[in-house]
Image 1 (cartoon, helix red, strand yellow):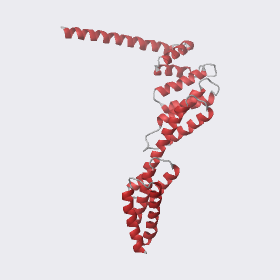
Image 2 (spheres, rainbow, N blue to C red; image 1 turned 30 degrees about the horizontal axis):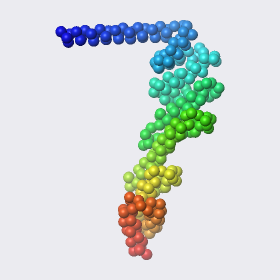
Image 3 (cartoon, helix red, strand yellow; image 1 turned 180 degrees about the horizontal axis):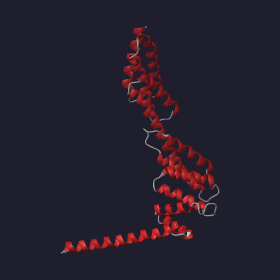
Image 4 (cartoon, rainbow, N blue to C red; image 1 turned 120 degrees about the horizontal axis):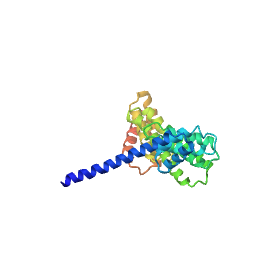
Length: 271
């Protein structure tokens, strides 16, 4: 009997929820079909306050052309961008924020639109292994934002995001340079690692990269034809000296010393 009563109570509440949902939908349908644009606009603002993103976006898209050129146009355009953002469509939101900041340079929403334009690129920035076009675009957009609003309350937040984005570029550069080493293309690895170190001299991977630069030079020399061994082993020794002068207490020092000794032995024999 208790189970039956519980089932009836649950069914009753589910029915109430279903009825409320139907009434809610029918209410929105009424707003959607209304020809009263002022009413639609007021309801869009209500839905915006309630964070019912789909509903206010749908209404504002209908009102865009109606209020274009009026004092309400910037509110509609900005709230549309917000709606796209909160629905997770960062590409469309970024485009909308970009259009807004260009068309409404004196609006009360302009600074926020500038920030969110950059933030959409940040949200679209992929993991380091992938192409970093959006990461670079985010850095450029945030740099532009700070130059326009140097006293922004979001300056600390922007600095934090910029560091995160730059760290991602450093990791991307590190991974790309090490890829050649891992597949055994030591000649390409030497070029890639040198370029990475040049682009990001303060990289947290510097010690590891400089060690692998030396190791790649050593392995390239070891696998070279006789005519190129002397020059390449000498290059490897030079990379060793650069490495140990910068990281005399490196965790890679033991392995590096063995390769250095082997290189010197080869050079002595060649001489």
